Length: 264
Image (cartoon, rainbow, N blue to C red; front, top):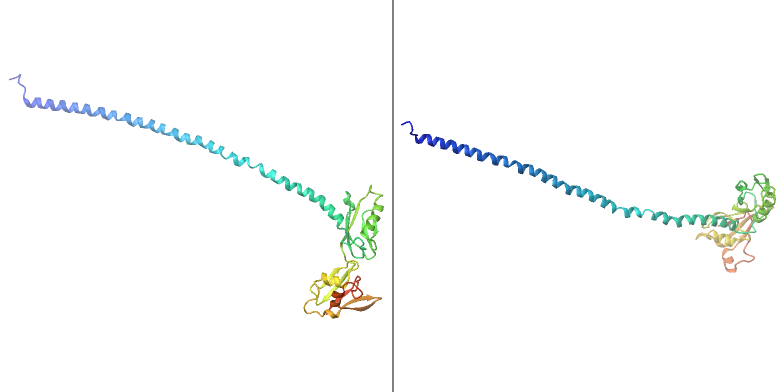
């Protein structure tokens, strides 16, 4: 009886053994899954090199910008011709001054005219002055110098003689900048009434032409010139249409400073 083992006991032992075996088999797979989890971390590390490779490509893109910087030196070369033009223009302006002293070389300087005097390489003697009622102008070191009654060429020669005491071989240029002593006046039915400088030997017809001629309301047959003669006003009739037909002649009056052309 003692050596007999009941079937219930055997069944219990088998259940316990199977359960233990099952526990042992289930634990290894749980630990085995951890390596794949750890192996995924290196995969992330390996995924970073491509990102680093993108950063390394940025210098190459920066190199592509160098052609844009190489074009920067081009503008200075393009400006060089522009800088050379002002240098030539300055010399040309001096020549223009010498040629534009007056429209008429025989013009006689008068009272109230504004003249400009330039002494080459001697800026301290350069002046711009209006002729005083006594016919003189003032200049450094030279004091009062007679200007009225002389042509620009004659005044320049006179100044050269006076400046030889202070300057070696002075080169003087005289320019009449404003003509105030020889002015005529135009009034009435004319397109451009007012005053204008009197050019030498200017006629009434020339003056009317410069002023745009009589307008549509003018009586061109009754135009006249007012002139002061020995303190009295004298009227000189002028037939505009007749002068146009005949041209320069006896009927075309030569104007004098202070004359007034009236177009009724």
